[in-house]
Amino acid sequence: MKHNRIGMKIGIWIMSLFLIVFFFLGIAIDRIFTNFHQTEMKSKVNDMITHFVMMAASPENSIEHSLDAFADFSDVSIFFINNKGDVTAHSGDYDPSYHTFIHEQDIEKIFAGETVNFTHTDPNNNRYIVSGMVIPQSDHDGATDKALYVLASTQHMDESINRIRNLLILSGVGALLIALGGTWISAQILSRPLLEMQKATRKIAVGDLETRLSIKSGDEMGSLAEAINDLAKDLQRYRDTRQEFFANISHELRTPITYIEGYAKVVKEKLYTSEEEKDQYLDIIQEEAVRLNRLVNDLFELAKMEEGKISLSLEWIDLSEIVRNTVRKMEWRVKEKGLSMQAVYDDEIPLILGDGLRMEQILLNLLDNAIRYTDQGNITVSIHHNPNNVHLKIKDTGMGIAEEEIPFLFERFYRVEKSRSRKFGGTGLGLSITKKLVDLHGGDIQVSSELGVGTSFDICFPSPESKEDEYE
Ligand code: ADP
Image 1 (cartoon, rainbow, N blue to C red):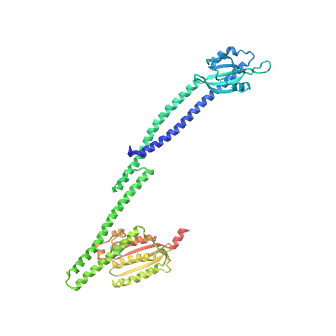
Image 2: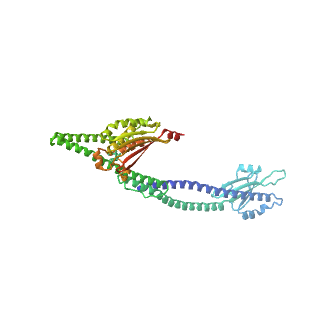
Image 3: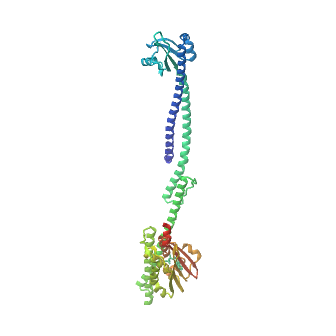
C-alpha cells in the first residue's frame, strides 16, 4: 500500500470531509423533522383543548359525562382540575396516579388565563404533549375554579420520527458506500499519473534519459508530464553535447600536443639533417604552442559565456571608430597576404549601447577569418544605419562556404573541412564566441556565402532610436 500513499491521503481527505458534511446534514434533517412533527402535534393539541374548553364552558355542562367518548375519539387523556391542582375528573388511558405533569406554577399561570404547553415524560418513560387551559366558567362571585389538561401521547409521532431516522441512517450508509467507492476510484485516477511521474523522474535521475511519459490529458497533470518529458529531452541533449564537447576538446588539445611532443623530440635527438630543417621544426612547435594558447583562451571565454559569467560594461560607443582602429591593427596581416582592405561608412552613424572591447573582439574574429580564408582579392568592412538598426558587414572574396555547411557554422568546434581549419590554424570556436557576443549585445548575425566567390557576415544592432520607441 506504500506505493499508493497519495491515493490514500486523497481518499482519507475526501471521506473525512464527506463524513463531517454528512454528520451535520443528518443532524439538521433529523432536527427539522422532529421539530416539524412536534410543532404540528402541539398545535393539534392546542386546537383540541380550545375545543374541549369551549364545550366544557357551555351551559349544558354535559362534557364531564361524555369525556370518555371524546377522549377515546381523539386518542387523548383529559383531566379536569380545580384551582388547587386536584384532579376532579379524568378520562383516557393515562394512569391517573401519575399526576407529575401538574405543577404549581403551571396552575397559577392557567388560572391567570394563560395556556401552558410542554412535553412530559411519565415514570414509564412514555412521552406526552401536555396542554392546560382554564375553563371560563364562573361561579356566583366571578371566580374561575375549573381548568382542563389534555395529554396526547407522542408514541405515533415518535414512531414516525424513528422511521424517518432509520430511513436517514439507511440512505446515509448507502451514500457512504457509494462515496467510498467513488473516492477510491477518483483517488486512483488522481494518483496513478503522479505515481507514473514519480517512477519516470526516478529513472531520469539515475541517468535513463530516454524515459518518456505518455500522459496526454490536457489538465495540470498533462502539462506536468509534458514538462518532465521536456526536462528529460533537455538533459539528454545536454548530456550528448557535453560528451561531444569533451571529445572535441580532448581531440583539439591532443593534436597540437602531439605535434609539439614529436617535433621537440626530433630537435632534441638531433634527427634533422640541416639547420634549416631544424628551424622548420621549431617553427611548427611555436605555431602549435600559439594554437594551444588560443584554444585554451577561446575555451575559457566560451565557458564563461555559457555560464552567463560574462557581463558587458555598456557605454555609448562609436562603431565606426572601433572599425577604424581594428582595421588599422589588421593592416599588416592583410598586406602580408597580398590582399586589400577598405572600410565604408554612412555619414553620422548613431552611437550604440555596447561594450567597446567586446565589439572589437567580434570584429577581430570576423576579420581574422576573412584574412585567413581569403587568398586573393578584397575585404570590405561597411557600416550602414536606418532608423531601427545599425548594420555592420564584413565581406571577403575568399574561398566561400558550401550552402549545406552554413546552418552549423556557429556551433562549437564546427569546421567546414577539418583539414582546412588545421591548415589555417583555426580552433573552430571563433564564430560561436562571436555569435554569443552579438547576442549579448541584443544583435543578430547572419552569414551568406558562395563557394569560390566569397563570404559575407551581416550583423545588425538595435539603434538607440528604436530602443526609445520601445520605451515610449
Ligand atoms: P576557426 O577558428 O576554425 O576559423 P570559426 O568558428 O571562426 O573557427 O569558423 C568556423 C569555420 O567556418 C572555419 O573552420 C572555416 O572553415 C569557416 N569560415 C569562417 N569564416 C570564414 C570565411 N570568411 N570564409 C570562409 N570560411 C570561413
